[in-house]
Length: 471
Image (cartoon, rainbow, N blue to C red; front, side):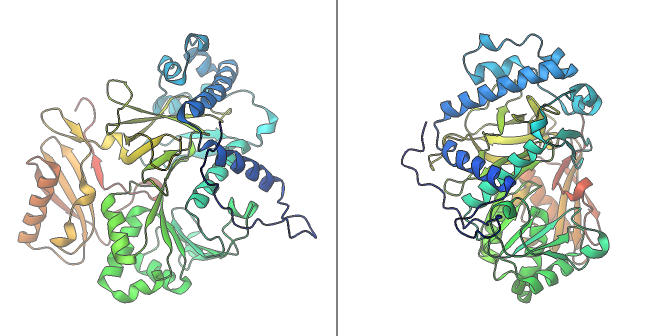
């Protein structure tokens, strides 16, 4: 197993933590651990896929034995599991039952392990935002945090970001409300970057801040990088398109980074057209950490296979073929506190094949969103609707939209608009929506002022299905 002829990722200058030494840099303890992990990640990303799977299998075997010994839930669930009866990871996994979100909600005390190695560090509680209406919490150790930071640094390095530049972050629960109205600033990018590298300033603003105030703030700080949610980026692009002066705060942008919500291709294209920069998307969850990051050469998302095992399963439980969409089942290879082994995240994604970049890391073509939000048709078909390409602003002055399926024959188009719409505009929007959904739904209109409310944790879903099993 070696990196072959691939070129190693160039690292920016390290930051020394040893008094009297500036070069060669000597990082602090956590920086040294991160450097050791990054060195291994630089090599393992180029391994052939079978070699990566063998390494995952070894780590999963250790985790399973720990979970069977120290977790009541896993002792029951894995009692019949016999690792010696399978030759490879793909034979192991189907022999393990899938964990459901409700398992984590109702039986977390049984899932938690009564003991874990002290070397894994202090425990903390990670809680999901509950955007699905089903919040969960897991215990995570210092080891989990270290791996999260390493994967975050890998993403920075893959994207070749210039740490000397400034970073702006607009996200939920960032600061106290009184501070968030004006934004807050730090001298560096913070962890994990600052453990290993020197960096420029960063600035933060709460996601709930009015979009006009966000634009004024961006115009004042002129960041090189912007991290925010896709829906918030869309609102900023609306302002930029309506008023060229609003672009002043984003003319120095090198790249936009998106998190937390489904990113549609239409938004990528729009960001490139309006701002002249691309988007790098990150797929992560509070329960697991960084799951997949975008390939800088080949497009799509590479799974962080050194930290997680990802399966994409069809409705019949079989693995998805290339181009098929399925449920994301994740195994966190290093959580020995609340083991998540074959955990159903509730998300959907499209499977992909080998990447043109040459990395052996598994590939996801596209993240679709929540499984519960599949469109349901009267004939029983269910699929992910292409609402992200819905050209609402070509028809009417719509700032924001959300589509809610209430029944098998009726949807609601929830809108935030710049002015009241005419009957003709409503009819045109309804006709366009029906065309995109592929079925002659009755369309109701619901208007929100000034914006459509976000879900728990500040996340926004552009399509919501309220039909539940058995309805």
